[in-house]
Length: 239
Length: 295
Image (cartoon, rainbow over all chains, first blue to last red; front, side, top):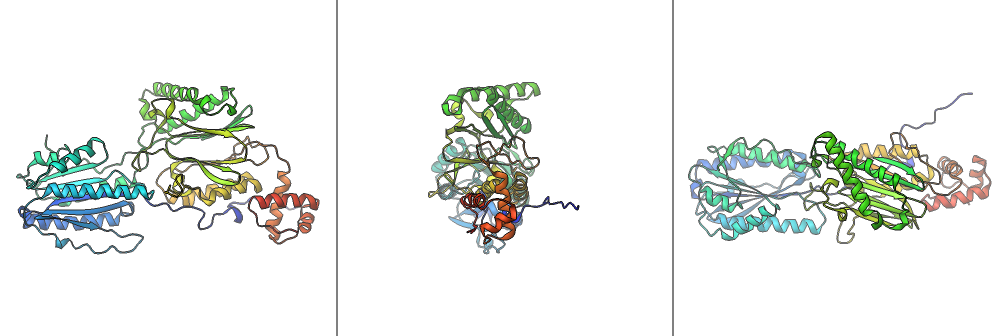
């Protein structure tokens, strides 16, 4: 008598899953605000280098699948007035709307206090929106890059960032550019976080590190510390 | 992950070590062992209610973690792990949940979320057994087994596909249709077949949606004693008084071969059973979601 092996190697047809049998939950979001000092002191080579580095940064985030799905970014320029430039990377394979970085110009005073308040408002509002719709999110990031000192009232910004840093509801990364930066005021503006000193105008390394770090956070899982790329090798803390 | 039966009680355990913990796997094994040992020596019936178990279960978990940490010479935080437990006896069930992951239940035919993840504000934050300050940190849910006939335990990675995100309309989120598929499958197919289906889904579309570990325990009342863990399937069942599972499987298989439109008489001849027996199985299959006609 011939025996037939009826053991099936794959699930029988009526046990296989069809489309709609699993959920496609939204990826956890990572809200990021980058506050840039675009005052008159950044005119010339500094703003040119900064914009080039920003372009590479956006491209790097877009190229990383996890970061692209997670990061929600805005650049807030503080030069004369405060302007919000939302950055949209591509989603689901569709090309991103163009973000004209060349519109950023270096001119005017340094309303860093107002820019940080705007950034905090954006981040707070976005967290509330994500919470209301059940979309998970990572701890938001606030990056502050400045080569001078604020020319407006920073009290409100300092209070907000201090409270957020104390409650561990925000990651703040202050970066001082050049020897004229007022690091004490920048530290106060950053909720007490000591600024990193950018060496020269190496914005490229700064944003390369930033894109890698955001990608690491986008890949982190519950209970796992994100493996941030290096310990800011392009800078050193000022004690 | 573990399943065992001690006296009248069957227990399912799933623990997920945290990625940030240096000895996460040891921590997961420790909490699984602690839960196992606790229920093996605990003579209290589950009908006493969840609160009757809170203090002793917490003490057992923390004691085991402490001993393991001492043996390995590491701090307890290096053993961080979540924990999902479902215990079932003839009359009641008890669920214990610490951290992320989800426990699902089928009650009166409806799939529901029994226990949601305990996450911090941020997506990569959760609670571990070792983080608990006291017994109140254990989430315990229990009740009579009336109307309850299936459970599902899933790790956070699997929940990315099997648990719909909470919304204002569905505060606890929903279970994916795949879960009911597998529960029903346990009533009509051999556990090994359902195990293959679960494994294919976990290793395929579910794993593609996450970077986290994916583990699933599927349990349903299937009418036979499934004390033996099905190898490779992580598929387990629990005992309930019911007859005729084997013949029902034959009937289900025959309807799969001959088509849902096949008559009861034809199926009866095909499997060598009396038509009344086939009709009885037909009604059960329909209750499990099979679209069989059979006149």
